[in-house]
Image (cartoon, one colour):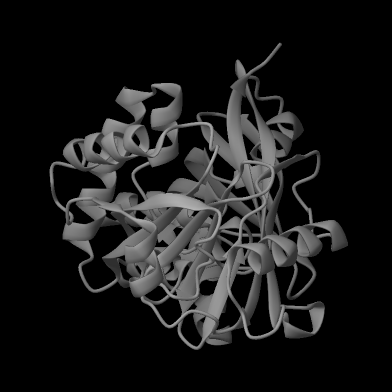
Length: 342
C-alpha cells in the first residue's frame, strides 16, 4: 500500500491533473471514479483515511426518503426513489431490499391507515421495484416480531427499502479502487492547505500527513467534496456561494444481537423521532439521534447513549434491560445539510 501511495503522489505531482477532488467520502469517491471512467486524469485526496468520517458512520441504509412524504416533498422522494432503484440495479450484490417493521403506538400524531396509505404512495413512487407494503395488526407483529412490545401499539406497517450488504465504507472504497484501476490517483492522509487560481490552473499545495512534507500539484479543475468541511475549504480559498451547511449528528450504538428477525424494526422514539434497530450480523445497531450540532467533529454523548438505551428497553421485550455494559461500539456521523445563507 505504501508503494502504491508513493506512486500516486509522484504521478499527481509530475503532470497536470484534469481534476483534483478534495474529500474521499462517498461523494468524492463517486465523482473521482466517474471522471476517471471518462478518461480524465484525476487525483482524489482525503486528509484522513478513505471514507473515514460520515461515510463510515451511517445506518447502512440506502433509502428513497420516505420521511419527506410527511412534508409533502413529493419531487424529492420521486428522485430519491429513482436513485435508490438505480443503485439496486447497478450493484445487486451490494445493495439489496430489506423489510421494515414500523410500529405505531396509540395516540400517535398520524392515524395508522394514513401512514399505510403513505407507504403505498412510497411504493408507487419507487415504481413498484420492491415488495408491496402491508398493514399489520398487533397480533401479526406479536407473531412475526415477538421481541416487540405490542402493549402500547395500535398496529404497524411493513414496507421495503434497501441496505448495504457489507457496509457503507466498503461500498465507498469500491469507487476508490475504480479510480486506481483507471490509472488515476487516490491518496489518503493528504490535506489541501492552499489553492490559488493562476494562469488557468489551480496551483495547489498539499500536506502529506504521513511524511510531514508538502506536495505541489496543478489541476485544471477542483471539486470540493469535503462533506462537513466543505465550507471551511471554500472560506480558506475565498470561494463564496449562496449556500452553507448545517450539521445533523446521527449517533448509533452496537449491541449483541437482540432481534432474530431479518427486518429493520422501526419505531417512533419518546420524543417522536424515527428510531431504528438494524440487524448487523451477530450484532444489532440501534439509532439514530438526528440532532443539530455546531461542530463537524461531534461524538456520541452520555445523553445520546442513555436516550438510545432507554428507548430500546421501552420498545422491546427483553430478558433483561440493556445497559451501558452491553454497548460494543458507538457510531456517530455528521451529515452536512445544505441551507441558504442569511
